[in-house]
Length: 103
Image 1 (cartoon, helix red, strand yellow):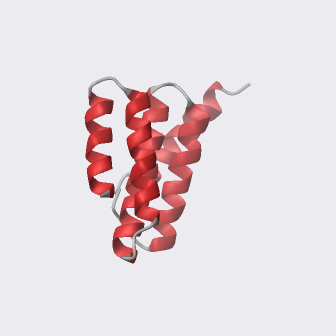
Image 2: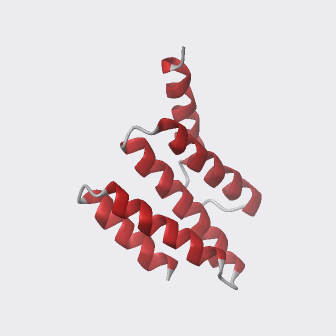
């Protein structure tokens, strides 16, 4: 089921409904966390947390975006996967962006 929530979240995000997308991505993460299959659990946790970071970034909540992207990046590293290949680069880009606008 996490895959269904992720796809619905992407559709909502693409249709300009970030709050609806956020709700679906949170449901995907919650559902993934309950999975008995480590491969599924790990993959969908990383993808869900990445998606939450992207939605927050798009809505201008850079601190929340960084929170989610760091979580996803840490998980992907810890789990030894590569489900979101550009995750580390996105996180670093956001950190630089936040650093350039912080007083």
